[in-house]
Image (cartoon, rainbow, N blue to C red; front, side):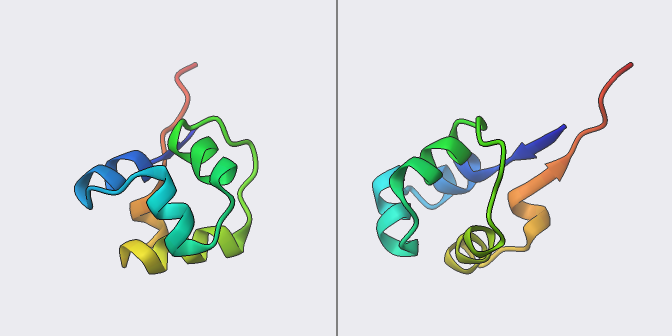
Length: 69
């Protein structure tokens, strides 16, 4: 499973979905899907913009959690 840490990063920077959408130029729906961890696909350009905004690495934004079998 891939976990998106956007909500945590936004909380640390005291940002709302509208703030992230405005600052990155991403569609609000894209940010909402990532925030709620319901996105099924993420564009590389979107990841790039979010990492630039939060000055973080991809590994800070996403993390892999092995599935328990």
